Amino acid sequence: MSEEIKLVLATADDAKVIHQMQYEAFLPLYEKYHDDETSPAKESLDTVVWKLTQPDSEYWLIQSDCKNIGAVRVVKDKNTTTYNRNCVKWISPIFILPEFQNRGIGQLVIKKIFEAYPETITFRLATIKQETGNCYLYEKCGFVRTLKEHIVNEKMTLVYYEKSNVRIRRFEDKDAENISNLIVRNFIEVNSRDYGITAMKELAQSHDAAWVKQVAGYAHMYVFEWKNQIIGVGSISSYWGSETESILLTIFVLPEFHGNGIGRTIIRTLESDELFTRASRIEIPASITGVEFYRRFGYDFKNGIKELDDEGQYRLEKFRKVE
Image (cartoon, rainbow, N blue to C red; front, side, top):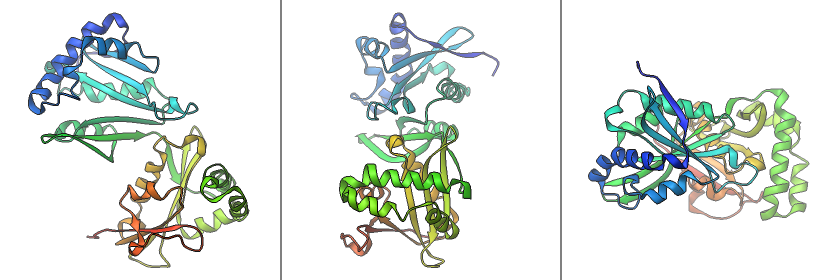
């Protein structure tokens, strides 16, 4: 690429320029899908002005050799807590004028966005499922498709992607104390809402560093870090020594990082492990607190029975075809 690509922070004075470029960039897609409710090509100038003036939103002009060729908006996720709102951001919209497309500019712009927001744990975006080229671009940039989809009309479906910037590695003995503390905090601060504080304090006593090391001794335990802090953990083991069945264990996220997509990253990591890919059946002992989260990944009640076991957990399972 010979031209120099830069991102320049936009102001309200750039609203007309952004509105016109957005119309030109998205008009071909609108004419193809007629997505009246979602197409940026149908947005009014007032809407663009409003987006430019929101405190949790930043618009960037995309420039090639000092000429405006597109724009990208980065928005803090409104559904996360006050503590971690800076940690999750949406890229919406991102567009480049038609005559500048298919030059690798989109990939470069996304890389520059990542660099501009180093404090972000998870980036999210949505794109049109039928536009396979766009899906490929985002996947090439490290985004992973989530399970969420939205059917706009009979021609068009929106699919959702996210990119997690957490560091993933295997467990080391030195991690045991931190992981124990992470698990205990979930018992006391989160699971106690469903089980009561007394029961969770009793359970916490058995989940010390020695217990963590014991689990890591027979399972593949993964640690998830952000800025050198352990914020998540997850494990997978064979199910009682079976070669065709496995079980997911010790899936926890530090409470203040709930809602950042870390849980989904943990599940994706465990489902990439060899103990998962070789298995035709995978089981999860799920707390009352977490059962619906796991069900979104295709796990359902074991043998179709929805009841708590002696440990106060639901037994979930998922079947898969092994090639």
